[in-house]
Length: 351
Image (cartoon, rainbow, N blue to C red; front, top):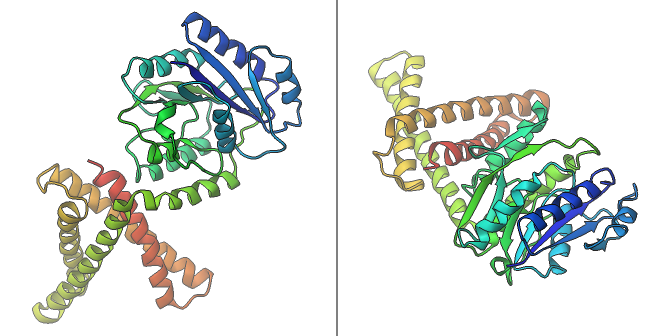
C-alpha cells in the first residue's frame, strides 16, 4: 500500500520544514511508500513560499483561510495512496507513530487507525485547564455517536476505499468524527500517542470552530436514527415518571397524611427507580441485572444534576430574562431533559 499524508497549514513557517524533514525520515527508515501533500490557506506569514523550496512534496495553494476539514479533503483529491492520512503541521503529533498507524492498516489489523490521546498510554503535554476542559467536553458529546475514545484528534489514517462514494463535508477543523460516522470500515483501532502543545505559532481553535462543531453534531443525527429513537423513548419515560411522582406525592400527603416534604422525597425516589428500570430495559435495551446497583447510582447522580440544571435555568429565564415562570419552567425542563439524556447515554448506559 501507498500512504498519502495530508498536512493543512495556516501560518506555520516556524514548524513546517522541521515536520516535513521528520516525516521523510520516517518514510525512509520504515520503508513506507509515502507522499506528503501540504495544503496551505494563503498563509500571510509566508508558509506558502517556504513550501515551494522543499523538494519531493505536493503543494496546494488555496486562495484564503477555508478551514482545516476542507483542506484535508482537497489534499485527498490529489492523493495517489491506498491509505489516506492527516496530521497537524505544528509538531504536536509524534512522527514516530506514523509507522504504527500505517503498518496496522498494511498488515490488515484495521481499516482505520487513530492516534489517540485518551486511551491507555496516550497523554497530552502543555495544555492549560481551559483547553483540557474544552477537549474533554467535545469528546464527551461525541460519545453519543461513537465509543472511540478520541474522536477529536487530528492524526489518523484510513483506507481510501472506506470513503469511496461517501459525502464527507464537515465544517470547521474537526473531520475525524464525520469519518467515523459515515465511512465504511470493518475495524477501527486507536493507537496511543503523546500530544505536545505547539511551541511556535498560535492555535486555530476558537469560538467559530466550537459553533461549527455543535452544528456538525446536530447534522449527524440522521445518520444515527437510533439516537433520536432513544431520546424520544427517554422523554416518554420521563413523562411517565412525572405522573408517578405527582400521584405518589398526592396519595402520601393527602390520603396517608405524611408531611409533604417527606412525601416529595419518597415520590422522587420511586419515580426515579421507575425511570431507571424503564430506560435500562426499554430505552437502552440493557439486561436489568447488568451492573444494576452501580448504574442505579449513576442514574441517580445524573438525575439530581439534571434537577439542579432545571432550577438554574428556571431562575435565569425568570429572574434575569424576565420570562413568565411557567414558560421558563417549560424551557428549563427541555434543557434538563437533554442533559439528562446525554449524561445517561454517555455514562450510565454506555455498556
